[in-house]
Length: 358
Image 1 (cartoon, rainbow, N blue to C red):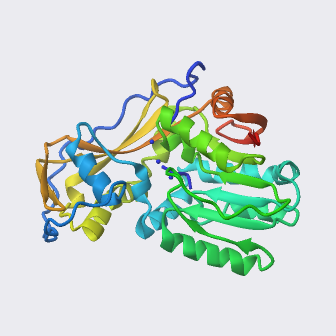
Image 2: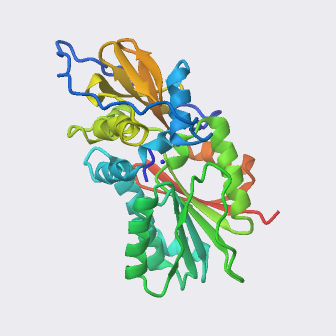
């Protein structure tokens, strides 16, 4: 889950420092009754094929493949983004408050690394709350460009920033930063600094994480990247963070199906699917799935897909890092690692990575 999110990298070569949890929870609680059936929406008739790389195209491909899996970037429509903000405030969800504490306690040191007049870019800005800590500490930043895939959520965040920082140029960019994109033209004599918070890098599979860092290094050439990543830790703490008692993460996961109903005319009944999240210590990642509680037939864009009982749609990975592993990955991507800031329990880390001009 973007701790502000897409699928992750393990810090291979470093010894694992956590033991497996007693085991992932059963996807179907003992004695659970079948969910009450609710009327399904009428699926949209088949029409032109959805554009490559669109939600519709990727959802069709996800349902047709085995095992079924889709990028977690599709969590983040307006409803999903709002649910994620609720997740960040949950007592079980340590990443947000831990990263905020690291940024707050080290804001002056970070500001010295950034320097005056910075051209600041945040990738996956979401509500753009953490960046306020940086803006309050920086010396006369020249511009802030928040980048996010959800236009509606980004518009609200950018408007709030422009209101609260009237001397700051705020230039929102609606884009999927996992694909080729353009940033606003560079400002003369302003060093471009990227901010990639919330361990969103952990949502990418290993090769994709390396490719993404390389693309960010190119976008930030001559500047730097401030990167927050979650660290390997006690699996029990990880399990609680992704299986909160209030069920907000479960609602966030099922919202993917509701979004498919709203936008694509699908006929998912979200109550046919259980939220299932567990830690895989071998891969050092949390996996999130939606698991069918019974045999289900779903219609999407004129096609029919069958789920057997227990079959899942894999919706997210969240890889955990070691500090040395992340620094090694950054070097492979062309960055020069600098200072690292951590909390006392070493739950989370924030890295300063210099981007060469070449």
